[in-house]
Length: 164
Image (cartoon, rainbow, N blue to C red; front, side):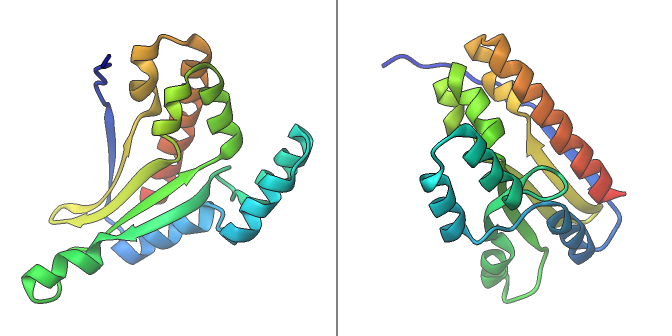
């Protein structure tokens, strides 16, 4: 079985804002479509134009939407008897951006939608993201890498804005 080694570049931004405020600022900038309705819209789209309309109604000001959210803060305190740091994993993306990467690197579908981790630590709230460019670099597709770089810039700007 062939394997590809991927070296991941992790970007982490630190915020001194309270955890709930950071989460509120992040969620305000990403779309939150009703997923069943969104999937129906994608399935019924008969052209790229139709698909673009469905996606544009789903994304937020960041041009990203939330696909799922996992609350690690619900799990971690169980071991500690309650309390402790908060941690949320947001699975976000934009199907139109994902499509462009997957066209030339099918394996890109393994990495999108992407994860933004928001977690509370002693030094503040960390917003962490693994760069798409680092995931796709081993595949050597300049077309996919160009899209990945644009996505990385978009996400890094979002994290910096949310953290400030």
